[in-house]
Length: 456
Image 1 (tube, rainbow, N blue to C red):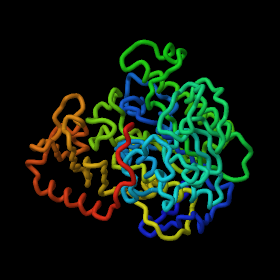
Image 2: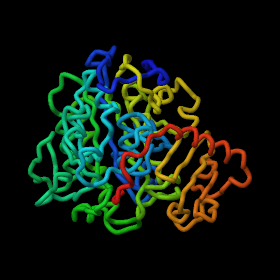
Image 3: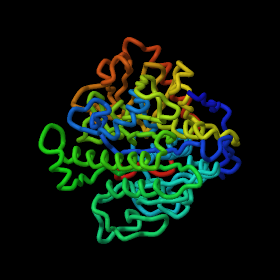
């Protein structure tokens, strides 16, 4: 197996302009990179994670062909913050992007222009950069994907929209090709995004591509085609969710099949993640809590990576990783070696996926969504939530609530992924230690750029 040069993340720096990057690989040697992200799906709504009610063979194939991360996390508890973290490789709280962008036109609300995106980096290194699907990082022209490092775009700007064509789409939810609205002649949005992604992959290439494929499935509204409803049939689990997931898995298959057809699958680095924990009504078994919470059910997601030319198939990795790692792993794969100063919070996962390292990629991870927060240090996780009932999931009491309605809990996650055994009373020193770690982590954060959006 070819040895991969590890990027030293502690010294990696970035120019906000995206300039100054170089690659030591020739165009033919550098991998294509494909990041696939699903939306609001439940943790137990993928056969990848052992679900018996949801069949996702094409998504599963990414894990089978590479690595399944059993403790994969997002950096946010809701859609837009996670995307901001993924795009920058930095905790989004560092630049005030803590909540979802409000679903109204704004010249000010969006991923701050001071932040460098993964697309900025990849384009400057000679990649064609393609974004598809849900954007949710700002609506004004300066926040548009083509202004944030992407060379091509096929999708919509808002955080949610109909899966079926709209007769009178708005400036926020209309389907765009680059910056121009296009007729909505598709039948179902999920299939349209898979089709468009495969179309881009099939185009003649004189450079490798970085593709960001952001499905809105299975975010509401709950729209499924009659054909998919009939295909999944009656049975356990929400039928509409199963049909929507079936369609998304089919679309992923269309994209992966096109990689095979173009004979570039072996040298394409593919990531699959969900953007946050499943929303209420979805199946997060065996995790507690839902989207918006810092319980495992709000932040732990399916996470799989494959790169057949470099990563051995069939691996299962059980230490925590996070979507912040996608940026540094991608630029390491492309051997992008020169940059200027802006620190990353993610790490390059290649040394762990190629068994060059056996320690933890992350000793400590943090989450913050308003007054809900969590710290995971090693196996221990401290969770604080203002309303215990909001995050409890399935009616279980997860933390010890005080008179102000604040729920606090300390859990050993590998031994207790459902966060059912609160260790706070028996480990007061750890409660204090993790609380102090959180306070130190957030002490220099700016004010949030906007309030909590009405529609998460």
